[in-house]
Image (cartoon, helix red, strand yellow):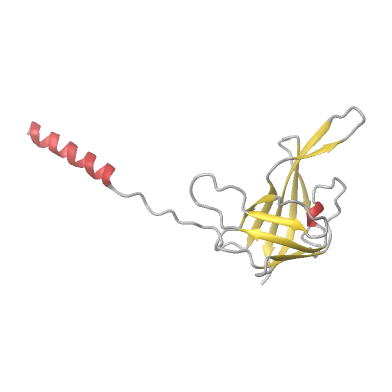
Length: 165
């Protein structure tokens, strides 16, 4: 009986650790083509737990991500802090890559301002399958000088969109 229990324990151990892990189900979109309406901007200053939330549901600010890597922005955000300099109305270049479902996915969206010849800047873009919303957020905090003493505030932000059908 003792040998039987030992064999049973060894068999259970082998079965437990020989099973292959489930395949990763990547829930992220392959692309973000289409027209997306801005509905909300969240701004965080100096990692304060209270974000400033600005509702844009009544405004008509549209981001049209086209298949030719062109982003056309229609409508303007009032940007008193200059956080959104590449997000002004007009045409932009963009690159999107589907986020990985394992490990550190890294940022997934580049948006460049053609006119400013800006260097490529990455953003976090979360666009899940079977979800009509998408978010874009900055990767690095934006540093803004606020007074003559040279002290600065650091801002993080995210934008929430819904797809237009």
